[in-house]
Image (cartoon, rainbow, N blue to C red; front, side, top):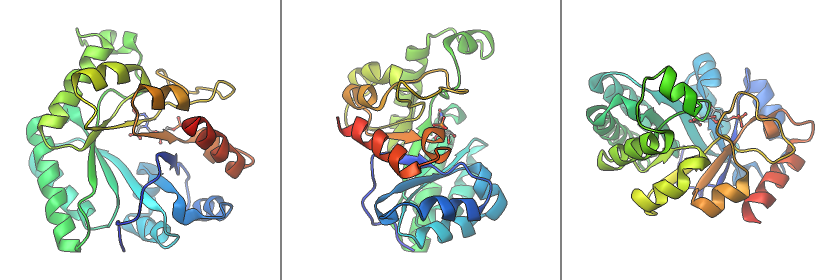
Length: 242
Ligand SMILES: O=C(O)c1cc(=O)[nH]c(=O)n1[C@@H]1O[C@H](COP(=O)(O)O)[C@@H](O)[C@H]1O
């Protein structure tokens, strides 16, 4: 178990139901040890930490995306458990507030020490990329516009010890200007023009995300549902480096 490997800025979301599907998917890649993959709730709720160990055996860097959101004490204790696993990134919701974010960092640091691994990067989810500006206004009753809200949450994350945030690409120019370039901006809701957006509301191409300041992008269905995942991955990778 280690998390000292180099991470890749194109992160693949392993949104699969079973370990068998994951292994079939990853086995198609000639160099899985060069991949950074995201394990989410779907797999973790089925297998627990065992799924992390299984994928670590292939040498992949791991983004463990469980989006914790609870009182500070609970989050601190949960992240102590996750910090031990030797993953590279974990997520929490910034809407949990500064006390929760600081507790998350403390827990992660304690867990990493216990597991004798590097402290994973703590990423704060701002407003999900599936939320539209209308949804922010009508359902969350938020009276800031989307960009102001995301910038505000990113500032909170930075002041509370997060290493970066999850954001859509649309807010990146404001984030880089107002929160700064010395912070990680990990961007899902990424689509090439030819691919369907699905339930994503705030979408951009890999090129736009990179040019506007993304430090990494997350791509799921266009790669994990593709009939040729390696070709799909290469298309997104080429567009990112374009
Ligand atoms: O934290 C995330 O990774 C995340 C945050 C967010 O705001 N939007 C978002 O789509 N994600 C994740 O990014 C992935 C996007 O998947 P696709 O829409 O299939 O590319 C999914 O695994 C989501 O859980």
